Length: 156
Length: 272
Image 1 (cartoon, helix red, strand yellow):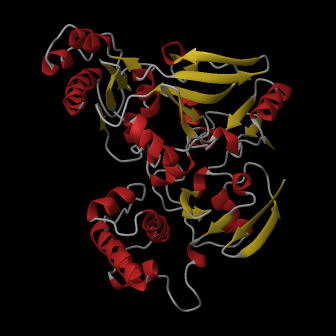
Image 2: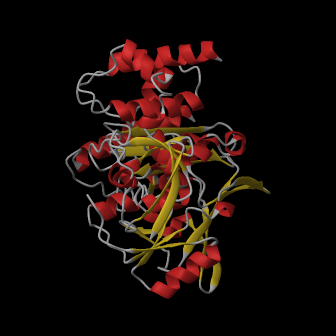
Image 3: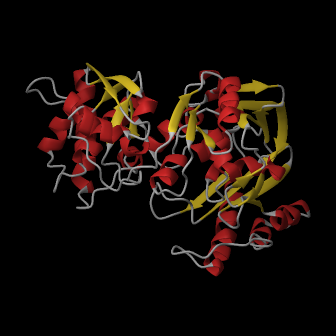
């Protein structure tokens, strides 16, 4: 079947099997390997991307379900060399150790801050419940999210 | 993990979805948000030959008042329940339960109808709807019918839905903005509850339901009976495990689950 969607501002159209998972489609058909497959069972959040602006786990969605949608992956956040405020905050607060969960954490954070622009620490911890960091680097991740919220607030 | 191959069809309306499933027979399944079905398909525990995607049937996504009830479209996502002003005012218990289903990403995709139709005793919403004496409206090839929650959950992952019937609406009584408690015991956000308890005051009576204490969501009848007879919360909660058949798994023994049920019911009642 044919699916078409807007990925990071570019139109994509491919012939796929109906059973193609969205993460597979993004990595293999679109060549966007920033989105990672972690647990592959919708537990870890490494594959988190935005579909129509909201965070979803792309390992548990078929590409067919995103037909016609606006999709944003980690590759779509920075503008040229200018990092997205959430990426910048993760960089400044060293919110990663091995880095495998980072793309998913950043995407989940973008969605969270869209829903709760001024989160408390508790909001952040609850809001990122669906993303696991096997290095257990949560402390700096939470600090980065709070800093990103503040930076985005200032920008507004 | 890649699911077994299947054919995909997208339905634009409930009627079209039912017609497509009837055309393809018993191996066809409805796909809503996919939060329960897709993991099963990836693990090859489910291998439908045809998926009829109802995810875009927009007119089945709503929360509105209807007399002394709240009517909820089956394709309303958990996120939309969580942020619904109507639910906050008219049936806050359902909002509180929806807000704790899975995690943000799951709540962005998962639907109340998908959760109910999947019929997992470890899911939160089916137990909450059982406590509320919800009514489910289903549409099939021969028209629509209504099924009370008490008759809907038949066994483990087994419901009163016929293969060609689509759940379209969930109706709950107006239980108000307060007077409820929800307790869920699990290890990580996205895990199923090891045990959960929902208590809600509806029309002067307190109703209590249990998550993951048997092959279906269960009403804690002993607790409700004790409360109706004027027992204290602590005494009533002691009867929480009566009539249950808690499963044994890696997370907990049946005995531990019985203990959890008593503790969680007490806490849920204290919050009412």
